Length: 237
Picture (cartoon, helix red, strand yellow):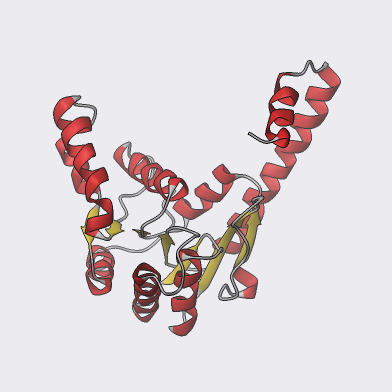
């Protein structure tokens, strides 16, 4: 833990008077509102999109980088725009593929002290910056007609399980979720089945139908297009 981290913890437990609380919280509310407003205004004009998530640490020579690029390219050829987190790694690959396919390339960037910076393949008028993760996730989920989860870390898991939970609880429309890389995800899925479902009964068997796991770009795109062949595309909530 760094000195900066310790200072943040001390500050969180420091005594505050009413004026401090009111001033800080009130301005924070306006900042949160401004991020929602900007996100809603820009995204409402974009049209059908698929979100592609994955690690910011994935290098261009990694097969998953190339696979994300292929998926994004193929999605744009089916008429979808592509939304990513706007940063490097898999996010860059997604925007790169969308740009190559002549489709809309959206970046929902988060301000972080490390790893995150806007990649050069996001359309200039579709690059939105956020300070708050929860606002960013709301925009992702509201304006995505599909969810592609490439291999990633804690952030990818956060976004994946948020999407699954909202669909499971009927808080958003039932949009398709596709996990890419059977070998990468097999350990997690085995734990979900063996521990969450069979051992502890914390989910239902039908919950396993909320997502697909594939290895190929064509398989992923086919799941998205087949799902929406009978629906009118619109925001999820």
